[in-house]
Image 1: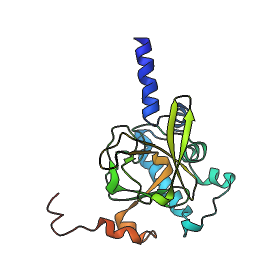
Image 2 (image 1 turned 90 degrees about the horizontal axis):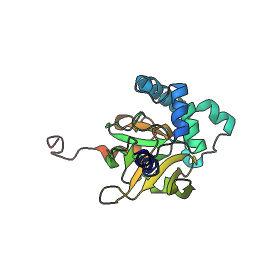
Image 3 (image 1 turned 180 degrees about the horizontal axis):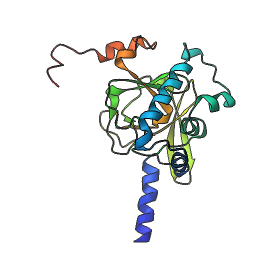
Length: 211
């Protein structure tokens, strides 16, 4: 029975995005708990709004000392140290609002709520990127096997991993860390400099009656 429990735990680690070291960090700092989600989320968005470059295409990534000051402990651990936040106790896993997700460091557009789905893993999951050109994949070999890491092109942030067990039509599951992302609601897209994506969320005639 002990061996079976151990095998199941290892499988969860391989197939999901869990990382015990970061879970312990969250326990120590209080980040990621249900009680602190709202406070942590507001602090994250406030920092992101202050930090987002006007032109992410010409981003000069801040040095490590600056990033340590700008990012929360879990944001830094995930994006700069390839960590993983705790499943289910993160900001965007259950977020159903319409909008886009951008890199917390660079502000580059990464994913859309239109491609987000409930994978049941406890992390925000997407079937495809909003801007494939802003996504870089690398082979990630570790003690638990080989996975495909996902990073942002301009910010070089660790975002998560992509798996081949997603729904049609892509069959992919982009398993991302909320701590690596910042959500921009559809009503704020133009104000925040992402006006080119406004049309993605315009309702077609009769669509509002279909919900």
